[in-house]
Length: 142
Image (cartoon, rainbow, N blue to C red; front, side, top):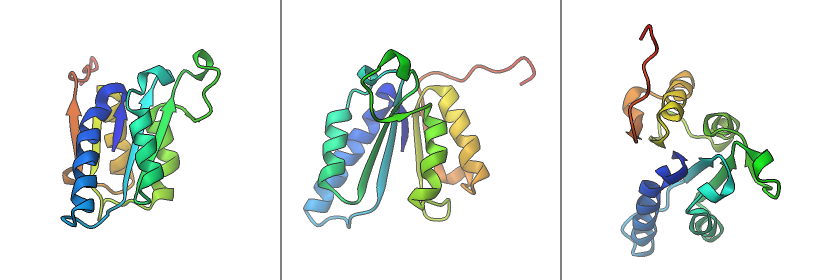
């Protein structure tokens, strides 16, 4: 799951429901990863809840990242845009298009870039779900 800023909101709902289902024996634990990006750390609105879930559940991983680290000098986490940090973690996480559904939510340029990245590493269109906040701008030729 890759989100920019408040695009993490749907993942919070999904994670909360999944935690309940696992605790109640309704679902087996499955690996989940949320990569959450903002320009500065103040934009990562669910950082405390997601970080706590990552500490509490071995099947869940949370990766916060900021792209304007020079504006946030005390930040010690990942640095870079969502799609750049995703490149670093995608292979290491072992997620493949054959057994993984990718979710993208937030800035339309990020979702377009992530769809391209996921396609290049073998994700079929059906394995990538997206929610846009506004449509991506079309280029003069497209």
